[in-house]
Length: 216
Image (cartoon, rainbow, N blue to C red; front, side, top):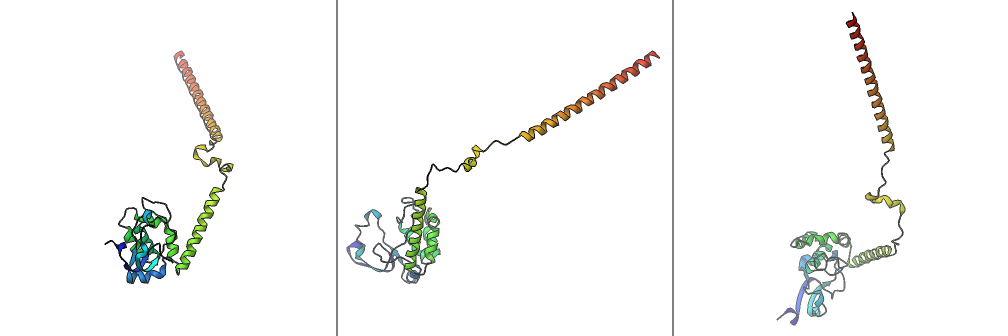
């Protein structure tokens, strides 16, 4: 018979929608003694799954977290079983076990990265009530950020940032460089003219000396 056709007793902490309190660091002792379990069922078939027939020792809920699996990436609450396991381990203070569970999947490490701030905050709480309080503060902050983004006037452009795009930077001023280069060119041309005049004078002197020697 399938498990839902008979009553099954599950000791330890069970992550289940029937839970009345969230998992917290106070559950570490229970998990270490009796283990951790999660009900494996599709989110689409959650309502049709007779979870109530399970005799659960310590039913628990998970606080707000975001999925990182390829199917529901970025969706809140839509965690896979392995993500739920890892989250419960991490929040209870068993962080090494969370890493081991996720290491079996290529995308596993992303779950800890995406939820790093929340998981760390939950793991520092004293009890389930504080976990919920931390969750609500985080959700309120997210709502405030969304509200601020939606109320922003997209036509309100700061013109002082017009040149922020490197393709729209003003052309550099080469006027000083041009003037200095022109001066260098003029000075060099004057020097060349002076050298030519000196050479022509020397040639004239040599010709005069040659004509005098011929006449003698």
